[in-house]
Image (cartoon, rainbow, N blue to C red; front, side):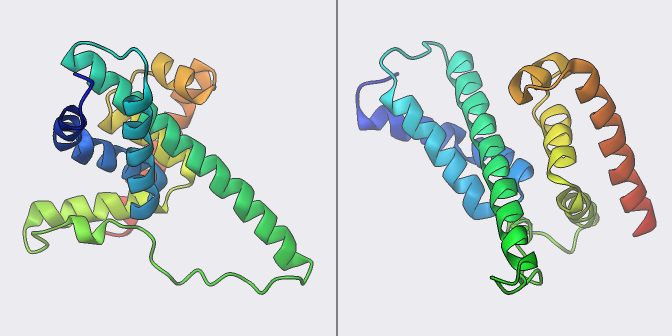
Length: 180
């Protein structure tokens, strides 16, 4: 499926929406999700030998996009830690946390429907979880990875993935019940 820009265009048309939403669930920011998705396509376009079948191509793109999104979370944590240290030392003013970076609101077309309201609540609850919880839940619930695959992707132990999944799911359910 490689060789011409038409092939990449076809792949983009077929998989971009899925990759974007996958990355968005992980990073919680539309611009970063777009960048993770674009990076996956760029890496694919630069490959010397690529997967041959559609399922192999899709799996490669999803895995590459997920890893790119995880890398973005890691960089964000490092940046936040650095900025926090600067802020505490008095060299930088405190960051304004009032800006909504969720990116979910523009994805909901039918906010009047009951299903859309539920989806919005789940997305908001998911977005309020810590990055690690959101990552594990997204990979397990939305992407369909099992614990061993998530452990391989994240570098965690399978038992850690399992316990983090249980805790994250509990936190999300608690948040949804509390908020009505």
